[in-house]
View 1 (cartoon, rainbow, N blue to C red):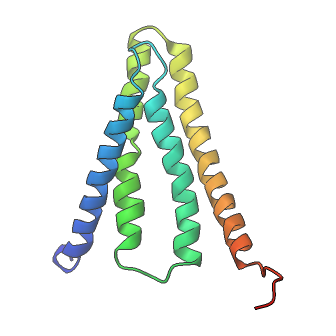
View 2: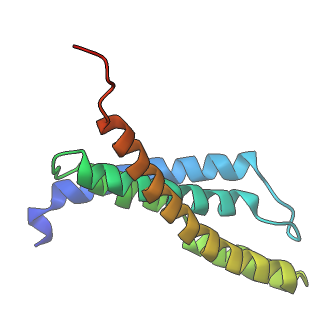
Amino acid sequence: MVRDRWDVLLVIACGGAAGSLARWALGEALPHPPNGFPWATFTENLAGGFVLGALMVWLTAVRPASRYLRPFLAVGLLGGFTTFSTYMVDTRGLLVVGRPGLAAAYLVGTVVGGLLAVLLGVLGGRAALTLAQRPTGRPR
């Protein structure tokens, strides 16, 4: 029931607010003209995918179970930072201004790039975990 999880919903909302503010800031830092490539949204979605991949490795292999950490970081923060809706609006905008090739490249590039970013995040997270667990060889 929702009333049994109000605290988790509050944590997700706080993470979502922080992620949305970060997405807005990146959009302000990387504006694009209507007929240009939407670099801010592309960067947000790929960076969010990479961080999500690495985060899931860390949360499942390193951190003890937490009622709040995964909902705050994965669902709230990264959910607010990444954006499927803006991705679709940007794609439509490119089509409206007569840039179907760029719209298709953006559409496919974001999906393929996002999947690769998650994979790289997982592989990077696993590599970092392996390095962190490796003995240093120095006597204690």
